Image (cartoon, rainbow, N blue to C red; front, side, top):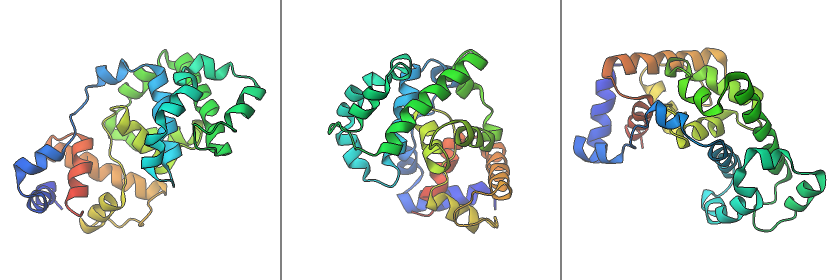
Length: 222
């Protein structure tokens, strides 16, 4: 299916092209992503992990507490915390006390530091990763990060400004309606490769960012 037909359906559902355009987020340039401080990457990883399977509103309401408890997500400070510090954090009522998710903060701080040591900059590494292989970046987040598989990793990338698609239910439904034979919860290499190829084709056809392609695909359904 040509992306133009998907765009037209989304525009019709949202009241026209002008109204649809107002719903699309600003496109962030790679150099802006490369300038993001490491602490903000760790903060957004943590936000997405804690929001997964939980009421997002509650996490957002408690976010000031998260920033305080996790020392503004300074990577070096997090990596320097002692076991007794982590035990105290797990009892702190300013955050949602989920032990496994709390432990992911340290794991992802280590992940950020490791990538920075290997490539010079975690921010630059994310910014420079080619959008034509986003599924490769998703796989890396899942393998080397902590609890960053699936939509958590994809939403993290979107939140820090990386141009990416996010495989929400509506996006998957749009892909299926376009003729792509993928599972409702596409996680296999075959499904993800087919999705990447489809988005690459839509990008070449339309010239739109992957973020806008993804949002428009979702709006064509919901």
